[in-house]
Length: 311
Ligand code: HEC
Ligand code: HEC
Image (tube, rainbow, N blue to C red; front, side, top):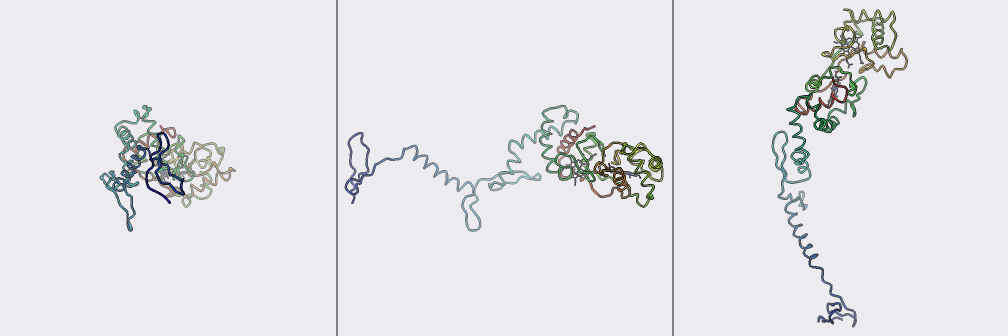
């Protein structure tokens, strides 16, 4: 049984609620501290505010959307959306402090010429950081994460050998308009011996095979009307950049996988195969002029230039 009168206890003793059970079982009266109670009420008020401000309650097939909005620009147009994690992310990417800093740097790059960018350590640091990210998103699928390329398909961008030229301007043109090098197939123009001869000559240019009677015959084909190779690769085989034709005198190979071939016979076979079938639509550098802004292209030109030895 209980009775409901509050007992006033002697000063200093613990207050009880006055309830007593079983004769002497009492309940202490320990009220919550005031600060605690008020903080608790504040969280309740905050929760109610939050329900109205942000997406909160499921509601049939939808949910309460809240009155907070996020604003971002996409494709030059400003969009205002009800707040959600996606619109908040877009807003942050668009006008967050990182995005603002990035835009400032991009504007600066757009207005600065290449030589001056390369001399400014702060801009170079930005190019390296932003360039790496852009490269991973747009370029590494073909050129490899580090830009080392894939023999036979995608040129190595880390070395200082350039098909189309390694100056800032040449790289910018490559990026803006894309590249698609072309070499005719000689399989039906030259006979097997001629192809073998000219392949010997090509390999002798970089010292993979010693010069021989075959390579001397091959040279005539290369520099004469029969082969006409010189028109793209140059009389000396060093390549003509405006044609995107490889330098055949260095030990760098983009199409013929000579380094992977073990024996001289296999190396010859690799070169013969390229001469026989040419280089046509096997691969292509896409144009980025539409996909990246002018400033981003400039940034990427600086990035690629310093990846390999730019010229
Ligand atoms: C779809 C595959 C692909 C993608 C993606 C790609 N490239 Fe290329 N890239 C190529 C091919 C193929 C070539 C060689 C084209 C040729 O010589 O005909 C090339 C050539 C180049 C060259 C010229 C190299 C030289 O030796 O002159 C540069 C520079 C280059 N790419 C940079 C880039 C950058 C920077 C990106 C990203 C913005 C990129 N590429 C994205 C396939 C690609
Ligand atoms: C119309 C221009 C053109 C002509 C003519 C031409 N080539 Fe090419 N050649 C190219 C291009 C473009 C490539 C591709 C460049 C690259 O990515 O390595 C190439 C690539 C090659 C390669 C592979 C190089 C490598 O790094 O893997 C060899 C070998 C070669 N050519 C030999 C010849 C020979 C031999 C002839 C003459 C019988 C010849 N080319 C005629 C344009 C030409």
